[in-house]
Image 1 (cartoon, rainbow, N blue to C red):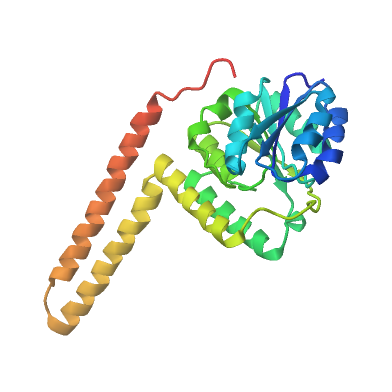
Image 2: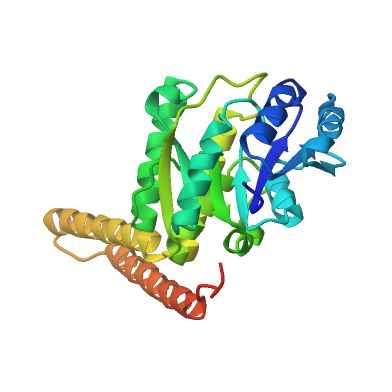
Length: 293
């Protein structure tokens, strides 16, 4: 039984896929709470969710489109169970994988992410972008991240809610929550899944949302590991100072004001990083794991 599980489905104009997905979830996860978060849909998403209400399906509605991340936050606030499972409502995720993710959470992990296999990526460009994000985030957090942007994951509810105020309203909530969990010292596991072709059109805009993902990685990295950002910048400016000093020494046999400015700037950036690192350490010194997860 899955009486301790809440499945949260952010949905915007996903009625076509929900007609098959909701019965499949109810059959695969007996006793689970299923929440459909309608994010300002203009189709009959709400009526499909209402018609499935007899199968423990609850509907949470936004009056207008607020974004995927906002829908996830609404679902997490309304869920009443101890384990939260997040899935895309577009038919890509197989309900059979939910039980596998939940089983690993019950084994003791704080969050289990459905890691999409390479051949399951939507296209070559998105697959390359995801690999770049994975490597960058892995360097930021110091942990290997297999799938930074996967929308399918199971997580302990109290721990997830600790970071609700950090989640953006857009499509990059998986990026934020993954990095937050790693940097907070919570255990994260990955479980390989295959995804199917989505039903309908994707709401992701590759260029705009790609830039947003990148900015969020740097924002979270700055918040949790400032020196990972400040130190490379300081070293780069210092190297520019060395190069410029070498040039002016060879050509003019003197030390210029520009070299002094570059050296002093690199020291200032490095000291800012040290101060930020200390503030971060003090902030999370009191951040302890709940006794009852």
